[in-house]
Image 1: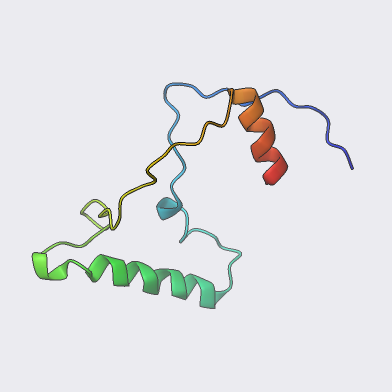
Image 2 (image 1 turned 135 degrees about the vertical axis):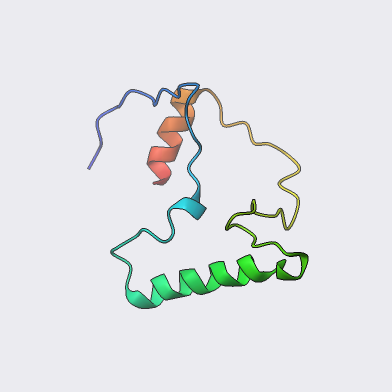
Length: 89
């Protein structure tokens, strides 16, 4: 099935980047095992810096455990990037 061409997404200055951290625990369709595993992993990360009196990701910011990518990928103009993301999704 061929999807009709859509207008590209328009990103405004008040756009907030999606963060998996804010969503992983709110997926009600996940079965109980996956939800429990999510909380277990969050607890492990939160307790990593407990010796420094920090609760990583709770009231403290999340720690950078490694550097990000050393290079950026040019995804082209917004319309092209939007088409590519829809194609991959």
